Image (tube, rainbow, N blue to C red; front, side, top):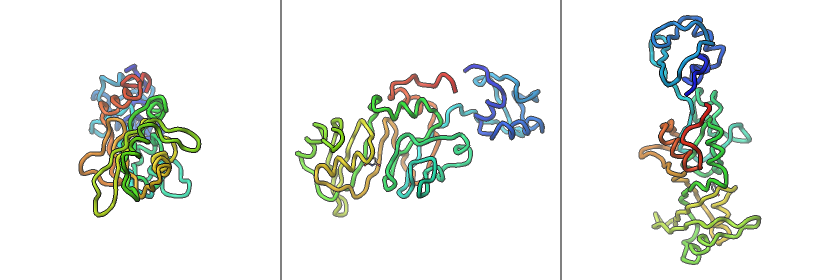
Amino acid sequence: MRPMRLDRYLGLCDLGTRKEIKALIKAGRIRVDGALPRGPEDKVEPDAVQATLDGEPLLFRPVAAVLLYKPAGYLSATEDRGGPTVMELLDDALRKRAVFPVGRLDKDTTGVLILTDDGEGGHALLSPKSHVEKAYVAQINRRIGKEHMDAFARGVELSDFTAMPALLEPLPDRDGAHYARVTLHEGKFHQVKRMFAAQGRKVLALHRERFGSLTLDPGMKPGDWRYLTREEWSALRVEAGLPPWPEEV
Ligand code: URA
């Protein structure tokens, strides 16, 4: 990675705004490889330095990408448009970084939601051209049969477009309720619900269990989130047809 200004580097260690960072440097609380920096405009080699705040090593995170277990009742948006948004579930450092949700899940949908400040990666994952797989488990009002599986495999016709072929698999009933898994390569508004509706089925609950190679961790609960590792984010970027890591961060 190319050399960058110290204040930018420290911003990517989630130390706050340029003003806050300048004050920390001035107060002598920051060291770079053990030495006091001259000022915010010092140049650092991001891959080769270790900065500290009050002696505590800082974690340099050039890209923020997060896996959130979206609970029901939250909007997949950055601004409040009539309800709590998923941003409220994150912390201040992530909100300051201006992460955005990669696609929308409906307010009542639960499961895997990715948020990132990597605009290139996020937008590529959203692009209909990238065809990244998304898998959903739907609770439906009535069982499905072979005719529905065939219809999904052919591509369900909706009022404004024909969905791309999708895999529909019946799942075992639980407590008298009926379930099916749908695996799609696109993500239009209300798509899963509309595909079922076109086949005479109503979705009673919807959960996204996978986005590309990414699933929830065992033990994660609704509202939990964690940073993706560099490897996980790189794998998703590659699935979306991009190089593993952004050139400019
Ligand atoms: N399809 C839907 O209908 N809703 C979602 O939230 C996601 C996919």
